Amino acid sequence: MIKTSYVGSLGVSLVLWAGCLATFCGNSRANEVGFAAARARMVKRQLAAPDRGITDPTVLAVMGTVPRHEFVPRTLRERAYEDNPLPIGWEQTISQPFMVAFMTEKLQAKPTDKVLEVGTGSGYQAAVLAGLVKTVYTIEIVEPLARRAEQDLQRLGYSNVITRAGDGYKGWQEAAPFDAVIVTCAPDRIPQPLVDQLKEGGRMIVPVGPAGDQTLYVLRKKDGKIEQRAVLPVRFVPMTGSIRDAKKS
Image (cartoon, rainbow, N blue to C red):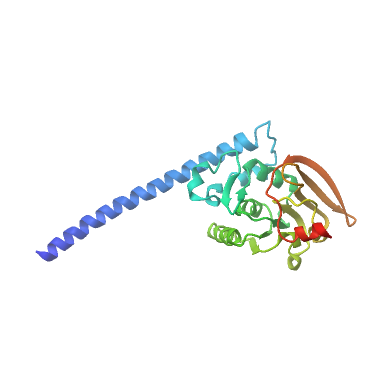
């Protein structure tokens, strides 16, 4: 009797567990379908719309595949594809999807490029670049953010992204020179170490200026000098670290 009762209870438990698992998996699949649909709408309405003007097909394609919801806090996942930046902790944000696409397009990334990103944040911009270039080196000064981004990028299979917790103002000398540099925090002037680590003919995109009065610049290194062009008024978190010491020099 005991054996029969045990087997019967186990059988019921297994059926219930299987039913719960099927429900969970079903919900998970439904969520992913929902996120994919939201991502497609994001590309169509926020990026490729005529009043937005992101036209590079490779940038639009990668923006349509990178799961932004995996790079935001779980409590904000339903808002992941909104046309807004979102908080990610430590007074930092994940940039608005349009800004990520705009900066990526202006960088004119090539499949053979080695790119330096200053300001990893959530890791989302690095993931987008990973789909377009050979290697991404990314630096984040807030160590917990750097570790979390590294874990998320590895979990999601972005094996061509190399992360570091450190001071982005100093760049990544051991890996230099870079074909392109993208800066996702705002210094009050263009950091000279990043210019020095840029290849001849290389491109850089960087927001510059104090809070409330920042401008996004596209730069190109030519004959050892920098040609720069202002492209957009923006609002980014300020660059921290040794940029403060550079201000005094």
